[in-house]
Amino acid sequence: MNNFASAPVTTPTNSFETGATLTHASAKAALAAGLARIGGGATAVDCAPLTQFDSSALAVLLAWQRAASARGTPLAIVNLPAGLSSLAQAYGVDTLLTARH
Image (cartoon, rainbow, N blue to C red; front, top):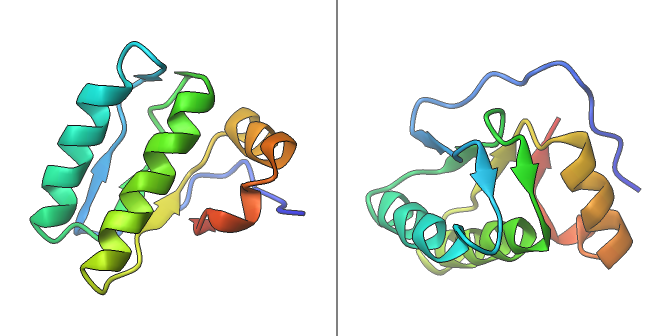
């Protein structure tokens, strides 16, 4: 079980941020934008701005991690919101997320 702290984690310099919303309606665009950043060498995603999300956010985060892994670099997920962490636990994918807390 993951215990995510509520204090923000410092984001690495080669990172990008999620938007405030990552739901089914925005997942396709978010996925493409993140893949472009990862293709450009990003090694971390900061989820601090994320306030509205659904299970699509988990799918996008996992896809970003797979893309980074395929490039030979892990993708750190920082500042994962507690609600999204709980959702990941409910779906049983929390251990797949490389979240730093």
